Amino acid sequence: DEPGIILFTSGTEGAPKGVVLSHSNILANVEQIEEHVEILPTDIFFNPLPTFHCYGLTAGTVWPIFSGRHVVLHPSPLQTKTIAQRIEQTKATVLFATDTFLQQYMRAGGKDGLSSLRIAVCGAERVREETRSKAESQFGFEVLEGYGVTECAPVLAANQPGDIRSGTIGKMLPGLEGRLEPVEGLSDGGKLLVRGPNIMKGYIRPEAPGKLVPLPDGW
Image 1 (cartoon, rainbow, N blue to C red):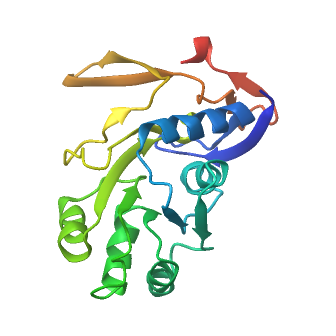
Image 2 (tube, one colour):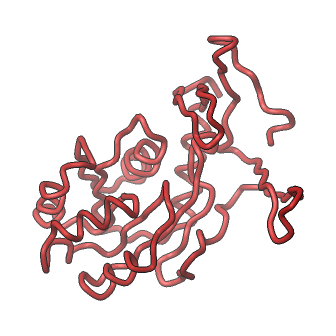
């Protein structure tokens, strides 16, 4: 339960702050992902995302290592041609990306460059239908859309292989509680609050450097 890592983020709220994640927060999220997403024993992961970002750290690096699977790391997601070549060379089957980067990799990969992929897991931004269609028609792999935030170590929900509804982020991971609070002026939605073993210990804010501000009741 000691702090394992502090990731600095402004997210969508504007004010920069430190998110304090314990060792157990990270490992709990790894177990939640492992329980939620069906992965084959023969899968080879390819992760071009940086580990200073929660997605590249937990899902892209710690998950494959702790689950005993092969993972190919690449230092920058911006080297699109090189990444497409390395995916082909390493016969990777699971790619971590964003919608924007995946579009670039598919363009750089040519006709067969990404044909070894079984699934691409995309987060950090909405997956466009054209991305999903191109992946399936041109290369034969599925695009799973997930959702997470740094404060949750980060993964909260994800689609499943063979169970994808376009425009959704799938079902919530096991071990999480969720509730919706009404938002004034929004009739068909609400503010999502979550609680579970992967939720951060608290914030470190600029006005009190080094001081952990815990969450009220874990939400």
